[in-house]
Amino acid sequence: MKVIIGSGRLASMLLTVLKKDRTTYVFGRNEQTVDNLVEQFPFVKKASEANLREAKAIFLCLPKSGYEDFLIKYDHCLQKEVTVYHMATAVTEDEVKQLCVEKKVVPLKLAGHAIVAKKEKKGLLALPAHHQREQGKLASWFPTMQIEIAGEEEVLLANQLGTEAAIKMSVELGNLLKANEVTEAIIKQTFDQTVHGVIDSYQTNDLGGFARKIADRLQQKGEQENENG
Image (cartoon, rainbow, N blue to C red; front, side, top):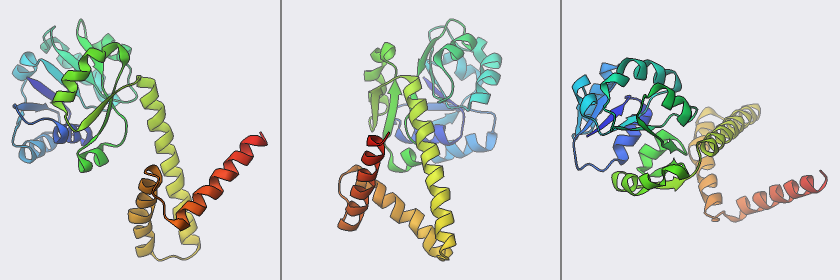
C-alpha cells in the first residue's frame, strides 16, 4: 500500500504520474485539499492512521517545515518495513533518518517544477547511487518519469540556480518591457509564449534565424569574458 503524505502541488504531481493500478491513499492536515485530490483522482482515498500502519511505502510530499511535525507525531504508526521516500529538496537523508527510527529512508527528488511536471505528465526524479536498487521499482510506479541516478546536493544546486536565474530574468525583462511602455497584454504574451518558446527551441537546437543570431552573439560575448578573466 502506498500513502502520499501531503496534499499540495508535489502530491498532486506525483498522483498525476503514478501508475493507476492500485488504490493509493493521501494523508494530510488540510481536509479541503485532501478532498480535492480524492475527487480529482478516482484511484485515491483519504488515509487514516490505520492506513499509515499498513503502508509499505510512504512519499513525504511536505515542505521542510512539515517534516518534523508529521514524523514526531506519526513515526510510531509506521511499521519498521516501510520505505520512506522523502522529496523535499532542502532536506537531507540524514536529517530524515534522525526523525524516522529504524526505517528505510530513500531520497527521491524532483529536478524541475511540480506544476510543469503535472501539466506535461512527465519529468525527472533523482535517486542517489546508494539507493540504485529502487530504480526499477520506481520506474514501474512512475512510467512517464525519468529516474536518474544523482545526489541530493546536485538536485538542490540545480533547482536553486534555475530558480534564481528564472526570477532574475523575469524581473529584468518585466522592468525593461515596462520601461519601453509595452502594453500589459503584450508583456503577458511575451512571458507566456515568447520566453517559453525560445527556451524550448534553444534546448532542442531549433532556434529560428533571429534567435540564432542572438544566441551566437551572447555565446561569443561569454567566451570573450572568460578569456579576459
